[in-house]
Image 1 (cartoon, rainbow, N blue to C red):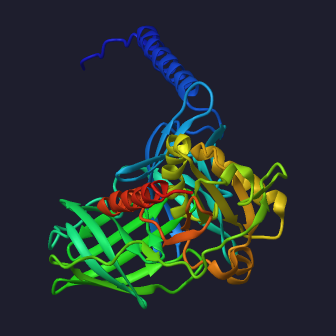
Image 2: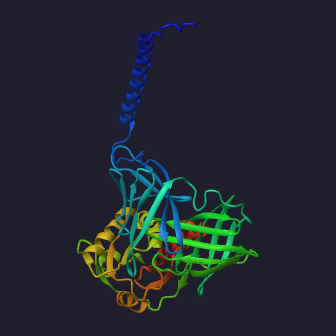
Image 3: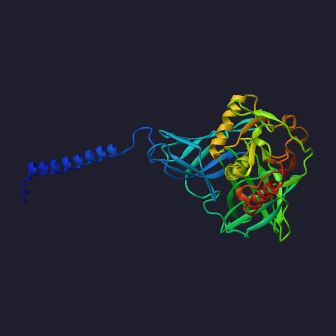
Length: 424
């Protein structure tokens, strides 16, 4: 019988204890390190800085736009991206994980909360003719517009297209690079501002959001013709539109030039300080006076104001005066003046901005007499040195329309220069 050597139980126990305590120490250290590095409860895993793809729950489907955020010392700088436009929010504030953008000139706002999953949720609030509108919003990091991986485009849409929209005709100016499509649609009622989107296969999708104005245009390309729908934020049904290439044919005029129904205009309206302004004031005698008819709620009026503010400063020494007659929603003058003042401050407007009424046919007719009612916002009335109304321009073509905007500004200036050459 062979005997087994005696086992050294003490050595085995010491060896086991050594490795047990080493493993336990490592586990404890890893746990403590994880607790130190983990974000506190309720904190976002990353900050807001960077580019986001945000979309609104629009009646026509998700309406996307870009958001570029820069935080640091003081208030954050936030830009709405509708390429090629990079539009800075009027006011931006950051409270913990909540980013709030305010547009006082529009009486609108966008509130976004950053969740622990790194995504955004919130609401966009703005005013429409029928009243307040709230659309849910959500977002994630990214720079694509409608589709992260769109299908190969079936065509190049670059060029001018004749648009049929209800009973109106207009022109679409489109530019395409790969799948990406940008541009604008100019209609008699005004332009859409900057549209951005894509052509995925034969499906065209374009959108715009500037803090208040929304646009969502969808269409299908078949046989060289676009046909689809455009959606408003407070209407569940789309409005049909179609387009064919202009192919060298002249585009419809963006701005209608009309002979005035009367050569006389008289008014007396207040500014926000309570000062009453009239065309009979000594300030306007013997000068060329341009009356712009608009409202702070009107996106095309914002684009026109960018041009008029600089134009007024440059031409005042030559005897040109501009007056803004604003027609604002609601029957609260104090609230209307707050919005008008915000509008004027946003664009550095130095000419009088007066509250003339509400944007209804009855109110504008009462304000303008035979020259009313207002058909399109904005419109402009040109008055010669002799005090007579000489011309009315209906509508505006904003910078998103390219050459149409160049022509609008040139025609405006030509009219003013012609009136300046006349004797009082």
